[in-house]
Image 1: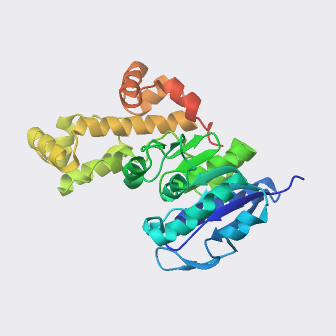
Image 2: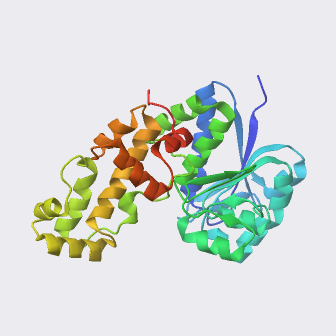
Length: 327
């Protein structure tokens, strides 16, 4: 039996609790999934003791950062958690000061959400592609120009640097780390345990089509937005949607664009692409069959839409992101 991999999670006052708990629970679940002590999880903060999460909950921490850094023990994975403390200079400075020494002992270095700003401040993302929470991406790019920021990604792996988007994207990152160590079957089993609809590949957008669009203020239009994802094979012309909303075609189209920031056609197309992506990731259905399931008569139409939205083909997307048909 091989020795457990040591995972150090870096925390501080103001962490986002789910960004700690999500990766910890996923990585810890690998011990159950493999039937071994695959990982040993340690928490470390600037001074050890107790840190206070962003919501006010006290969190007991096992070690200080300096203790871990000076101990000389090899770290398999160093994960810097995000939170509001990143933006408190006194807090962030204490973390950043210790990160280079910790990274020298680490096989791979990762961050969740705004934790990437701490890695970047320590010089650990220079020359690397990285991502972060969408709301911090511009700040990361402006403050650290040597970091190649990819703002619309769930997570990014560049050599031994792994960074994720915000909040629940830390779960995607942790699943990817486990898959890298123990294979896709273990990662998919854990994803099912956590009732994750599908393990999202790192190249996927941070927002779903519904989240990217603003919810309409008009109740009838908002009801249409909510109805659409489950009815993609129906007639979704502007005339049909306007009739469902009880509005004139012209009035519906004008109000939809004003209230959501896009046209009805663009919203429907985004939903169809998103549904097709899920099917490409999780099933072995042909492209033609998937096209029909999301409301297109021909596979060629799905090809054109994929090329316009994602600059790739459905086949290439499947090769890159497929997790196989669910069992």
